[in-house]
Every structure is written in C-alpha cells, then in structure tokens.
Image (cartoon, rainbow, N blue to C red; front, side, top):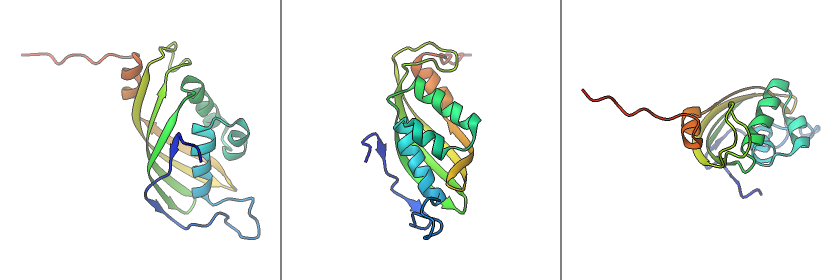
Length: 152
C-alpha cells in the first residue's frame, strides 16, 4: 500500500472487486476509482493512467497536475459508491515543483480539500468532476494574495 494515500474510513457500496465474477478484468467502479487515486493521482503510474482513464481531456489534466505536484499525497475522507457514480471527499498536499496555472514552480507546499465525482464504464473513468480548493492552493504557492479587509 502506498503510504502517501490514506484509505477511506467510510465506504459505501458492495465490497466486490469485479462487476462480473466471470470477467475479473472489469472492475467495480469503486475499485476503479480507488486504483485511480492510489496508482495514478498519488503514484503517477503512466500505465495505470492509460488503463484507468478513458477520457483524454481528463487524463491530460491529471498528468499536468502530477507534473506540477509530483509528491502529491491524498487522504481520502469519504468514498461513496452508487452504481457507476463514485463520490470522493479528500484532502491533498503537495509541493509546487512544476508549472501550475501559469505559475512557475515556487517549491512551496500546500494542503487543500477536494470533492470529486467520477463516472465509470467498462473498468475506466469516462467522466470526472473534480473540485480542488484552487484558491487555497494558489494562495499557499504564492500565485494569489488575499487582500486585507478594508476598514471603514
């Protein structure tokens, strides 16, 4: 198990590892997302990226995020499975070591929350809605600065 990925404490859904016990190559959506979190988002495994993500735009966004934060660690707080949809609540942390949102590497670390939803078909993520607390990340890496409140 990857020490940079904490396993969720609450999991909803069946504990099966294959949608069809006769075809173990097609994983349950929950298992696909768990593997994505461990092997792709945290592990940066290009082989897993190709096999677990069917959407090229999403694959490119994940690869760019990994280049910006190669030491990314994720603590999954909640993972809920309902059919082919998976919801994840997580906290991530990383160090800004590559370009991100037009900002050159600052070598600053950040911690932020993330809420995401994934739709899985035939053992791969086909749609993803990922919402990192981008303002928190940008503030911590020095990409934006919070204005002091105006006094009256």
